Amino acid sequence: DDYFSNVGTGDTVRGGDGVDILHFHFGHIDGGLTFDAKDGVGSGATWSGIEEFEGGGSQGDDHLTLGFQLRNVHGEAGTDTLALDYSGKSHDGLTARKIDFW
Image 1 (cartoon, rainbow, N blue to C red):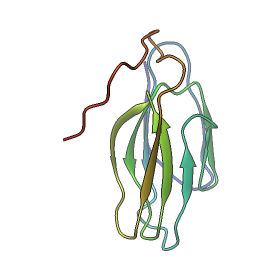
Image 2 (image 1 turned 135 degrees about the vertical axis):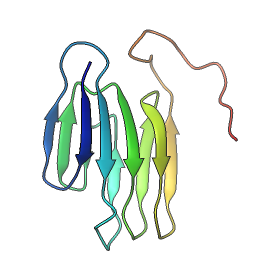
Image 3 (image 1 turned 180 degrees about the horizontal axis):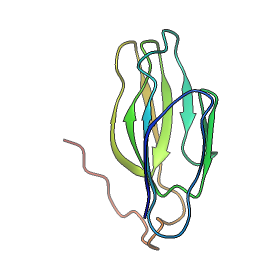
């Protein structure tokens, strides 16, 4: 189990065994960004083997795509979109039956 903190532009992260968490931080970027947890790319950062994500977007208009990996995310400034993709299974083999928002 690893926790990768404040991953930003140009960083490369490789998770290992266990449940690995990536905390991304792009608040210093003025323009918008695209972040896709399933594809392993976001604003020049790349990753693999990460089971959960948390963090914040840029100061611009962000497009974030997350699913089972989502822990906690905030968009910062701009008009942000969040696409939730719960297809497939989570890292512990569970499937989604419902989604609660609050």
